[in-house]
Amino acid sequence: MKRRVTIRPRAESDLQEAKLYYDLQRPGLGDDFLVSVGESIGYLEEHAERRSIYYRGFRRIITRRFPYKMFYRIENDRIVVFRILHVKQDHLRKLD
Image (cartoon, rainbow, N blue to C red; front, side, top):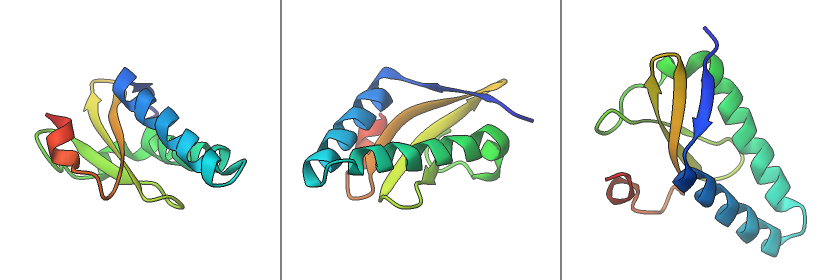
């Protein structure tokens, strides 16, 4: 079952902040980061329920090339992405 993905404003802000960081490291690297996140979103559209519940109803997926975790919930026929955080960030505190 293919579900629609919604990205919450805080996750969008996380995404833009990370893209800017990577673009400052090397021009174009931020675009590569967005492609990696897009691949993870594509996976979630088809297989979101394969990830187990991680914390307070949140599930997570780690992007392939970049060390980022996407935290999401399945809400009926859609997937809601709440945060996109670097793996070293204190993500449990940021989910509350």
